[in-house]
Amino acid sequence: MRDDGTLDDPNGSGRPADRSDDAPSIDQADGTPSTDRTTASSPESTGTPRTRLRGSMNRRTRLVVAAGAACCLGLVGVSQFGFGTTDRATRPAPAAEIAERAALDAASRSLARPSTAPTTPSAPSASPSPTAKPKPKPKATVKPRPKPRRIVPVAGLNRVQMDNAVKIVRAGKEMGVPRRALVIAVATAMQESTLLNYASGVLPESQNYPHQAIGWDHDSVGLFQQRPSSGWGTVEELMDPEYATKAFLSALEEIPGWQDLPLSVAAQAVQISAFPDAYAQHEWNAGTVVAEILG
Image 1 (spheres, one colour):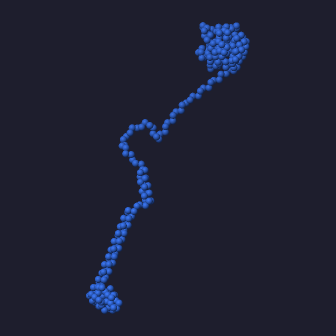
Image 2 (tube, one colour):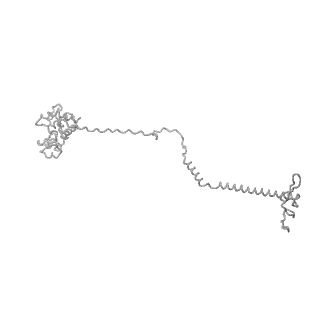
Image 3 (cartoon, one colour):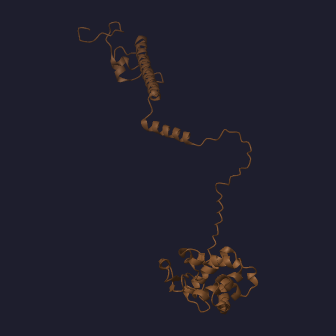
């Protein structure tokens, strides 16, 4: 620093620095000196070579510094851009992006994958197609049971008498006797008991069994008025219409040629009645009753 307070120019030779050093002295195009007021007022701006050289160097120095600063800024920007790119590349993905990737992966895993089995032709299966409806099984036709035919009383008989005639015919059918034997049996019962199951007043035991009337002809009981004392059976057995019928028909079958005998003769041969001709009067009615029962 000089005594007048002016800083020394480190680039100069002890001369004072002037602002005019920054503005170069340029001659006009026609060769006349520039009339710049600043240049004209400076005692050292008269266009000396050293002054011009120093001004040019100052401008170049500034350009170099500016260019260097620009290069440094560019390098810093590039480095920051590179670091930012690397930082973003290595930064973990957001949770939403992870969830989306997981959903895509799960969906791809759940897709049906093609079978790797060899496609060889297989034999046709005997089982029906799953889409084919099974044929309905034919319903078993159950035939209704025929209702038993109601047998109505005929030949002037009432319901009780007709029921007893039915018991005689059914017992004869179980034995397998012919129709003629059934007519003889029904006609004999018509004559002996009027087709009523008799108990005996002489045998009080007979009254302990089902009966429809009470008679007094010795110990004769039942539809055929058979006597226990004659060996036909016990009182209990003879009070049973089925047993009494089979006892009568068994005795009838023991008579030789009974099929060809008149009804009264065949019946009398079994019963040995005091009125042998009385059976013949019931032959027609007995045939009607048997026909109704057999249908």
